[in-house]
Image (cartoon, rainbow, N blue to C red):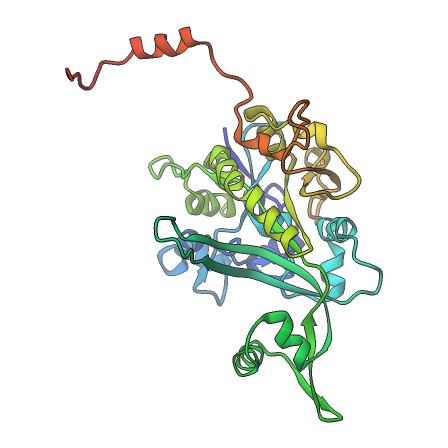
Length: 372
């Protein structure tokens, strides 16, 4: 039976005074601030006016997100992380708060930025580009993707360099920079821009699992499970829709990795070991063949609870201290003796025999028949 494993940052079973006080403020220890529901789960927010018992638990608040971090499908099984903030958050925090997290520290280690480099971090960066073909018989090529995080060295550059790097006229670029809060300085007749992106980018994509939606009658929808769990009642959480997550990741894995390479950078996908294992079992991509200590064309950084979820400490978040880097080429270099590559993610790990296919047809009534 599915249940909430982590609630507002801590194991749901931890009801120590410090943790309960933290929950009453809807505080998330992973972002060092008010829980935002993972950033994109607004439909799961709860209007406290409609829930008087919960309203008493969150004094001074009118609306709260359903702060579910992870779900455990059965006793003794490692939980599935469903909130991206639980896995990795790189937003507005101090340097000390950011580097306090084990996933952040490991990510920076993998990125390979030199010690002392000042890094700018951008969240939810959208890049849209249309390559208009002159040939009317061919379709227009479109690139339209949003990146979870972009990490890039920053520094002071001249106006001319900023214009060259961005490909924009100065008037348009200046307007964008001012709107985004960049600082300008003038020295010896030259205009300089502070904290401008320079060097090679690292794109970071965070993939956590989706839930199966739940059942309102059984009170297994996320808001219902959250309410029951907060109030100390027996609760039932929804299941995990890992196939949907894999499909979303597979459609972007190669494209975003290619884009970063074209920009002299790299993409690192951050996910949980359970999802990595599912990918290995359901596609021709066996990630265990790609364990590496260095990044390559495609990079997956998988974190694990290990066995720490089985003996969580009071007043402490459960660590994700176990991490494995999988990296390798996008495509096989040798057509005669092809080596494993990340394009294998779109292939099936096994094809059923034809007899099984025919047997499946025998179980279905024909919906139509025609004579040509």
